[in-house]
Length: 167
Image: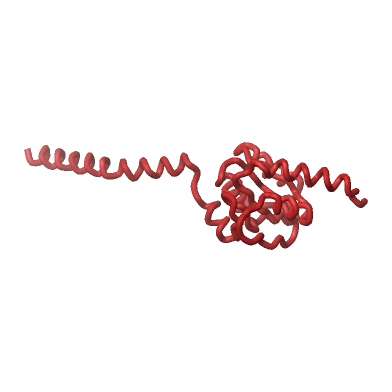
């Protein structure tokens, strides 16, 4: 059944509204995802306050052009969905995390995106997606700071043990 021009305009307005406040947009190619897998993906994205919708490519291009991002829009082979959010890294990171999981039937892949107002290629978005979360970065930083202190304490303990053994 063909979609009327009025319905297309409503869909386009809805897409523009959703993407207007997004700091990061990820273009996702999904292939043969089951309804159950799609629900799991949506729940994971919702938990990180990331929106997700499936879009017709022609309407998506119109909505994306309205964002006035710098650079060249990437190609969209296959089916297309869009993940977007207020956080710069969360849409890419969560989509990539779901991409790594084993799936029964289908799969998803990052095709590119818009990061901080600039179009990014697939490889650039993949590198952004691999950035750990803020809590993980903080834990890694604390581990780096704590490591020399731990080594000093272990060294002092070994000196104490050797002096006790001599005495």
